[in-house]
Amino acid sequence: MLPAVKICGLTTRDAVEAAVAAGAAYVGFVFYPPSPRALTPDEAEPLADAARGWTKVVALVVDADDALIQEIETLVLPDLYQLHGSESPDRVREIAKLTEKPVMKALKIGGPQDLEPVEFYSEVADMLLFDARPAPGEGRGLPGGNGVAFDWSLLADLDLERPFVLSGGLDAANVGEALAESGALIIDVSSGVESAPGLKDPDKIHRFVDAVRSAAAHTAA
Image (cartoon, rainbow, N blue to C red; front, side, top):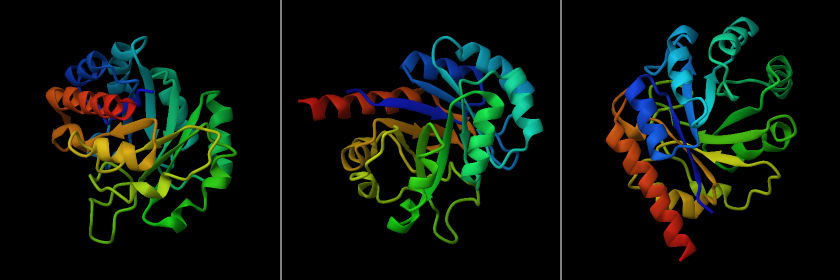
C-alpha cells in the first residue's frame, strides 16, 4: 500500500500547487502565531480553496479557543483538525463536537513512556500523529516543525484501530527508513521540504513524495 503524504505548514500558492501536483493526500495550514508557518484564517482561505477537491485540507491549531476554531471553520472549511498542543481527551471530544469534523491529535514522543496516553486519546481522536519531543535545548520551542526525529521503531508494535501519522525530522533522505521502522501508512513533513523556515520548496516537495513512492515500491518488491 502506498503511504499517504501530508505536507504541513504551507504558506504560498506555489507550495500548495506543488503539493497537489506531487499527489499529497493532505495539506496542512498552521494557525499558531509563534510558528514561522503561521497564517490567519483570512490568509489561509484562498490557499485552502486552491487545494479543495484535490486533497484534504488540515487545520493545525495549538490549544485553540472556540473563537479561533469557529473562525477557521467559517473561512477555511478544513476537512479535519490537527491538535498539536496539550489538549486533553475531553478537549479533543469538544472540538470534534463543535466542528463535526474528524480530529487528529498529535503526541510528542521521546521514549516509550510517551506512548502511555495513546489508550486515552485513541478513544476520542479519529487519528493520532506521533511527533518528536525535542530534548532540552533542541528545536525552537515550537510544538512541531522543529526538524527533530525520534526512535521510529517505538511505533512498530502499536496495536491501533485508527490510523496513525508519523512526523518529526523527516526528509527525502530518511523517509524510507522511517517507513520501514515504524510501519506508518501516513507520513507528515514540514521543515524537511523547506528552503528556509516557513518557506516550502516545490522541488523538495516532489522529491519527498517520490522518495515515499520509491520506498513503498521497494517494500512491495
